[in-house]
Image (cartoon, rainbow, N blue to C red):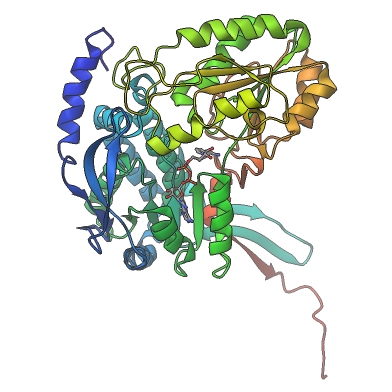
Length: 511
Ligand code: NAD
């Protein structure tokens, strides 16, 4: 990606070439390898930078989902029998092709979501890594434990659960889709993917790549299927379909509740990665320079549209005012601009409805007695869905800005007195996804981490992802874990087989 000041011009020209195929068209579903616009119903896809109309997208119906689920079911018989080492090769071939289209994926994703290119430039690389990581685990996915007893040989093995549904959100759609689909394929499952209606385009590229590789390998066309559509229609039908055995879902906690209800009739297995209101806890003995860098990065990168963002900054009272002042100084200097400008740090939010949500908070914050230390409105001279990076200080735990997920470039700062106070504040929210602790006291770091209600905790670090580790949240932040072998537990059934050594006494009746 170009770095100099004229990078925007170059990137815009390249992006236009990649977007040309979508402009003015109707983006179809891909069901059993065939492009189809289904019922003919569509919805509009707008570009966040100026809300201009790019294209229309097929709005999937229950019929489209049914055809996709049947295609996935038909292909399952073949895909589940493909040996692990061949699945490994196929997933690596998908990764190769993702990497060869990295620029296209980055530019399309950036324009479709409003995410700055400086972060999206790596989207394809990270997506490819997910395929390589799970590809390498495909040969051992079915391995279980040997559990011998005195009279029996017990062993466990795993087998793919069947066709699965993957439902993804709009914030970093390419990475999140690969994060779900790669382990499903490695496990031997077939997939129906329903991407978010506000950012449907990178799913088109991913499906195209996967389909090409699977077809060249001689597999039937329904291993991966893509159905676009509105959550309450296409998403709902997917969660209710009897042939779909499990739903891997990333999105809002309220949607997770709907999906659980919708899936009840068919006893759907669900895996939920949901919202967060994650604390970063800064003690007065921390390396404050590093804590400052990480806190700012974790909430203002990716436009703050990030489930693991450090959206609540809890600062020990003795350093609170100085740290809040340093935060404000940084936040004021964050570069807001066109997502394709390499200098841009915060781009436009995804959609006008999301802007309304994010900008509903400043008034309530003031009414509840907090201070809007930076931002709180729209930046001058920029249209589209731009909002100012915002910092709230003087907040209290009872306020909406301290409890609700805002999902924008917005940080709320709260003071705490001591460890007990920090722990109470950190845990006193509905969510429990991530937490960040800044202290040089090793014992405190450990015992504080062990008392936090969060699925993932980083000490003296921003979120640095390591693919073998479990990813997921507690409380309203989710059910289940992704990563490493944890993903296979979700996409596979565990089977125990017990073989007698013909030595034990079998109880006799009717003798
Ligand atoms: P959302 O829940 O509104 O939508 C997510 C997906 O669910 C979309 O594809 C949507 O069409 C679909 N959907 C909506 N209603 C549905 C229904 N009734 N049945 C089936 N599907 C339905 O979420 P969003 O606004 O797209 O994404 C933002 C949310 O995602 C935030 O809360 C964020 O924290 C969360 N998120 C979590 C993680 C994580 O790993 N925990 C990662 C990224 C985003």
